[in-house]
Image 1 (tube, rainbow, N blue to C red):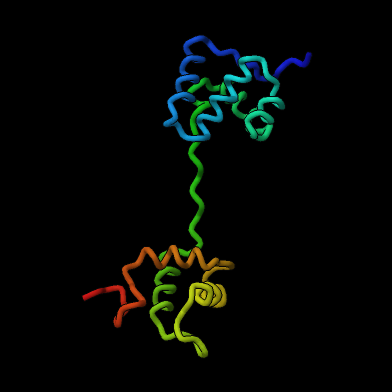
Image 2 (image 1 turned 90 degrees about the horizontal axis):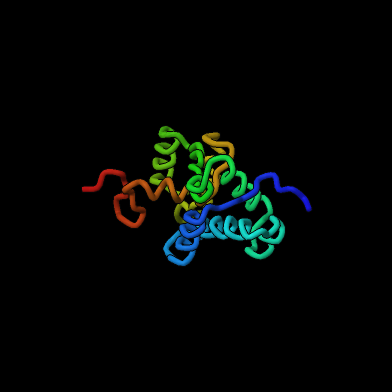
Length: 156
């Protein structure tokens, strides 16, 4: 028998807490999956068997067991904060995008589309790449409305 690197041995109160968390039905899915991992591992299941039974990766099982062994039950169940992604467009770039969206459409087009704006922002060298979805999110934050007669930022 292979010795586990991070064995899971739950105390009776911990086991009861995990069973209540699963039965409650109000916990996030990831937290419930981690609770199931710890309970199955405590019952003597191998990591591969737990992963197959819960339809998870073996890495998820391993990381959950490691966090339980090193940091305890609360840490094993909770999400770690993820670092925020850096913004592609800074404030100056967003101002340029808004001005561009409020300007007349390019030759051969009736109005600016999100894809046209994304291509123009890249063409102007404001960013190396930009998706139309990123453009949509930036424009949604502004009070401009292309459906109005005056689509400027300041509404009267």
